[in-house]
Length: 348
Ligand SMILES: [Zn+2]
Ligand SMILES: [Zn+2]
Image 1 (cartoon, rainbow, N blue to C red):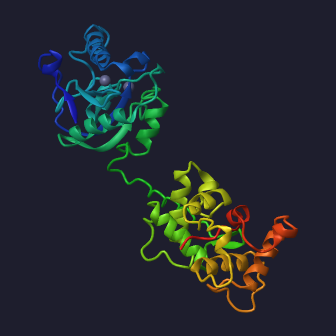
Image 2: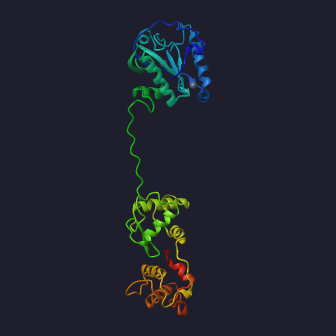
Image 3: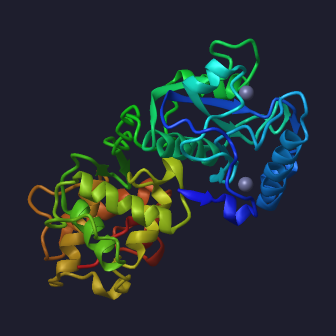
């Protein structure tokens, strides 16, 4: 509790009558317009409280000997001492009501500053609990309870009727709902003839995983990467997509053609040159080329593909070339640099 005492306010001990116990506390507001300037300047709250006391001391009708309230609370969370502990209030309307409850006023009014901040409600709660620890019973009421007045205004009275809960504090708050777990995308796409996404299976999945790890996007793998596309692949791929500036559905972790090509370009087999492709050539590059041709649907293989360049490789590659629009010598089944780039043979 942030308490500003009478001594700090420069006030002498209260001359009000003693009232060691009550049934509880009644909440008030100023009942007049209050400047919203108070919100931005706590020193204005002190001035306000000083002027309330001065006006009460000047009030010849009520004949008050002190500010009428036991405490005030301001929008900044301060409790300002009035008559204080063990003193009868003069604010509740008549002598019986003043004996029944202590009085705490909120420094808000009927116009201008009308809505209590959480800090104000917390400071009201502080004042209530201070009084409850020093003779006040459990009742928390509004000035309007049992007396014809608008006080303490509707916003504060609603709070009183709700049991004057401490904001975000000790009152039981409704359990916040579990934040929804973002669903992990589980659909598949086919890019360059190969399937990616949850449940996809094959070397292409392993290659994506390895490329992700190589680029630093492997944090979701507990094991692997491996040939079965799991949620971990999706989550890592989503991290990679976000690194490219994608967001929302474009970063759901299921590959798009652009991001996939960008990821795998570094992992593509460079064109080995036309002379590479001749009878007797034995290379893993031939196997991987053949696997790509199979994947794209241009297989003329009866067995394989395998590492030894042969007629089935050439026939398959020729079918691929024709699909690209080549004909004649340009579709002779010997790879050229342009078609090779389009075939996207993975590096080892
Ligand atoms: Zn009142
Ligand atoms: Zn203040």
